[in-house]
Image (tube, rainbow, N blue to C red; front, top):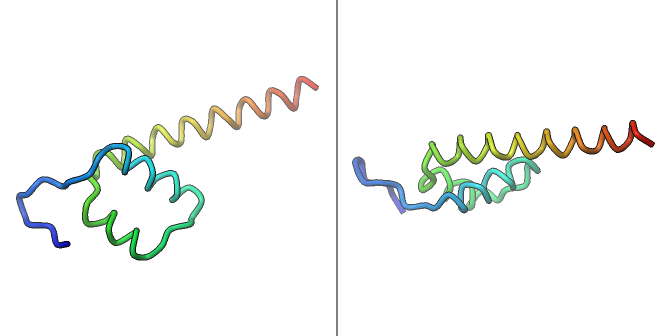
Amino acid sequence: MTQVPGEPRKSSFAASMKAVFWSFFGVRKRRDYEHDAANLNPFHVILAALIGVAIFIGVLVMVVRFAVSQ
């Protein structure tokens, strides 16, 4: 599937969240990566990454607080 210049990319925010989630683990098939690169909206990817980082930091803070309180 090739991207036509000027044509909007066809993807959902959920697809961007899924791609970012798997990217955090570093586990991604080349075929899936190429599909994401061709179809994902860059704004959605950046927003999904910021949300993922916020969740990751929140989980780390909760784990540290739990470990320190024991």
